[in-house]
Structures are given as C-alpha cells and as structure tokens.
Length: 318
Image 1 (cartoon, rainbow, N blue to C red):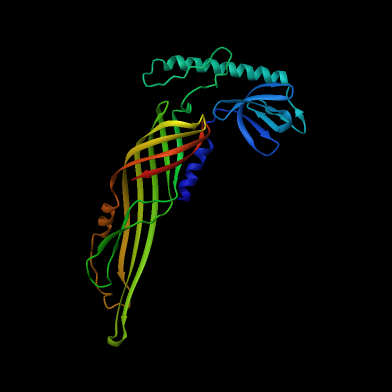
Image 2: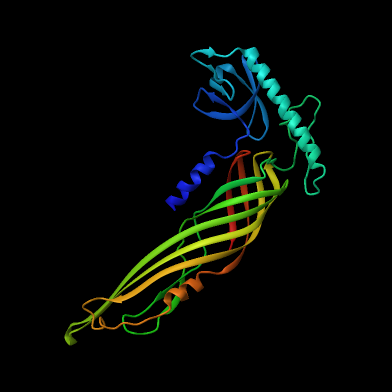
C-alpha cells in the first residue's frame, strides 16, 4: 500500500491548477488564486470555485504571481510596480474571458453539454451561476479510501491428518485504498475507472501430541493472497448542498477481482506424517473463489476545495 501512495503522490502534486498566483495570509494560510486588481489597500482576486473576493493588504503576508514571482511582502512592501501588476492582470483576465467565450461557442454544438452562459457585460469569466459545481477539467484523478471493508475473502482450513480441506469465508474488515480516474461527459455526469490492490498473508501452525502413546503430528500452513480490483462505473451529481462547495452524488458500476494465491502446507520435521507428500489444487481453488465479477451501487458526498481538489465520502454495496 505504501508503494501505491508513493506512486500516486506525484500525480496529485502536479494536478492541474487553474490559479497561477498565491496569496499568503498573516495567520499562515495560503490560497491559490488569480489576482485581478490592486487598488490602494485592497487586493481583488478569484479563488476556490470561481469566487470573487477582496482582501485588505494588512491581512496579507506575501503575494506571488506567475510572471513576477514575489510582488509583495510585509517586510519589503510592493517589490513590483502596482500599475505594471494591474496591466498584466487585466490583459490576462481579458485573454481568459476571450478563451471562455470561444469555448462556450464551441460547446453549443455539443449535444451532451449543459452550457452555462456568463454575463459577458463586465462580469468576470469566472462568475458562474449553476445548479451544479462547475468542473472544467475533463479528466481527473483521486484516491478512494475505505476505512471499513465489508467484502468477502475466502481461505481454507485443514486438519493435520490427511483429510480434505474445507473452504470458509471471513471478513478481514481492513482499510482498502483505490485510485480513481474520472472523465466528464456532461456537467453533472462522470465516467469512473477504479483500480485497487490489497494483500494479506496468514500462517497457521497446528500441533497435536499424545504422550501416552508417543504420538505427535504437526503441520505449518502459509497463505498469501494478492488481489487486483478493477471497476468501471458512472457518477451522477444530484444537487449541491452549499453552492460551489458540497455536492451529493449517486454511483453505480461493475467490477472484476483478480486473485493470486501462494499456498503451502507442510508437515513439521518431527511429525509422524513428515515423509508424506501430496499434491492439491488449493491455490487454483482460492483464486477462483476470490475472483468474482460483481455489481456495485452507492451514494456519497463530495467537498470541493477548488476545481482540482476534493474530498469524497462514499457508502456503497458491492
């Protein structure tokens, strides 16, 4: 699982960010944003899900902009001419507005698009009035963490004597983690692809001793179970609880598990059965039991920090 996190971290780190500037407050918090204008003691910006806001300079510790780097700090004041900053911010905002107008015109010919028209007369291209959270990125990636797993795992138990093995099921109730890729096909519909990995290992030593007949039999079983899990589905955003922040969604999908088993059963050297060798099909048996095709259904709540980062809670049935 650690190797999975190490692999996924750089993908999250370099996720698409539509806000190239950063505003640092004096209380230690920082916000990716788009600086639009600086006037006197007030800085106007766009941040989070296209929210327009202004902040007094007294509350700001530092401002960095994509072109200039650090343009303001409490120690040095403005290190770049304010007029130059405003000219650059205005041209940048104009280009973004023109780009969005073109994209809106192109979407008119997409039968699946749910177009949200901005108020072009003087409003920011980031001012969106929509029932659903506006997610411009077609592709997205996330990590799905499940603190409680209610699925079924199969193992075997057998006697130290030469009797057939019995199969039984158990719930390991362990935490599971999956990576999730999504693709937006409409304003409130996204296709999903989940890929997960889990690993379990068990060792069972069974010993029986009868001193009065000088009898001893013992065995040592080891089972390693590796599972790859793939699931495709659809996520449908139902409604927002808080505009541009929290949304409820339903999801459904179909998945397939692929199990890989390594199983050994050996008698201990002192056992009276130590010289017995045999073959069985326990590995193939467990692989078949733990490789089902399944259907999933659930719902969840998603909190959006910004257009590129969200936190999701899911309740599902596999």
